[in-house]
Amino acid sequence: MKVIHTDKAPAAIGPYSQAIVFQNVLFTSGQIPVNPATGEIAGTTIEEQAEQVMKNLDAVLKEAGTGFENAVKTTCFLADMADFAAFNEVYAKYFVNKPARSCVAVKTLPKNVLCEVEVIAAIEA
Image (cartoon, rainbow, N blue to C red; front, top):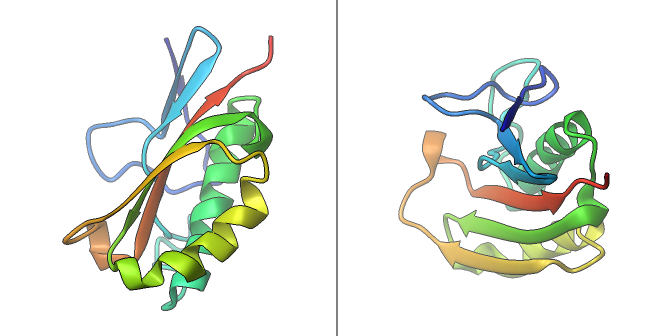
C-alpha cells in the first residue's frame, strides 16, 4: 500500500490519509470543501462547495497519477437532499465518464459543510 498526500488538498483532520493506493487502485478519503491554502470552508452554496470538493479531489487524483476519467465509483454525501440537482450540475462537469455512484443525505458533515465526496479510481500501469 502507498499513502498519498498532497499539500494541494486539505490535510486530514483525523487519523487517516488523504488516499491510499493498493494494486493500481486509488481509494480517496472523503473530501470536503476546505480551501487547502487557507484552511477555511470555501463558499456558502452547494455549487461553491461542490466546486472546491472537486478541486481537492483533482489534487489527490493527480498526486496518485490518475484523474477523474479513471473514477470507477464515487460516494457522495449531502447535508440536504434538496441540493441534489445543483450538486449534480457541478459533479457532471468532472465525472464525465459517469462512474458508479452512491449519493446519500446525512444528518451532519464535518465542519457543517454541505457536501463530501470520496472516489475509487483506477491507476493506469
